Length: 152
Image (cartoon, rainbow, N blue to C red; front, side, top):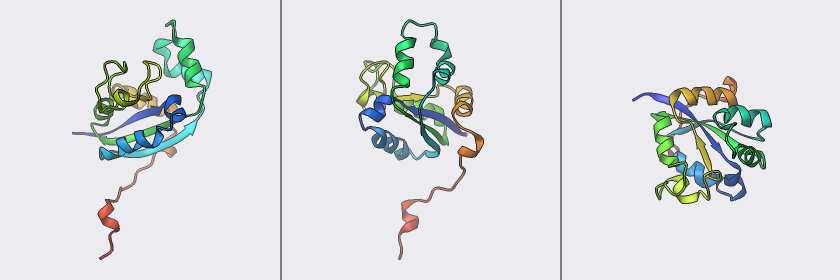
């Protein structure tokens, strides 16, 4: 098993529906750690770059408008097989196919309003992390176990 990083975007519906803490809590409970996090507004150019594989689709304008209606939160998550594990935690993009217990299965409203973006492959994760984070915005640290704080 290899330690790797992956990108997560908490979409506008996550912000609008007050689900940020719930989603981050689910990620942290997996044992993976957050090594980068920031909130910002997507630009037209950034949406077009990130969803370049969808720009010719009839729903792209609605997707672009949705992704720009509120700020989003981007996270870099580190852990063993992080890309695969986060994708499993996120669930299917289509909420009708997303299993209960996954983030999308529990919170998605539609294919567009599906709460979370998660990188699909290791190569995608590397490219997407570079798109949203500078190197100095990703941190290496040792996470302490709660037991480390118990005073005898």
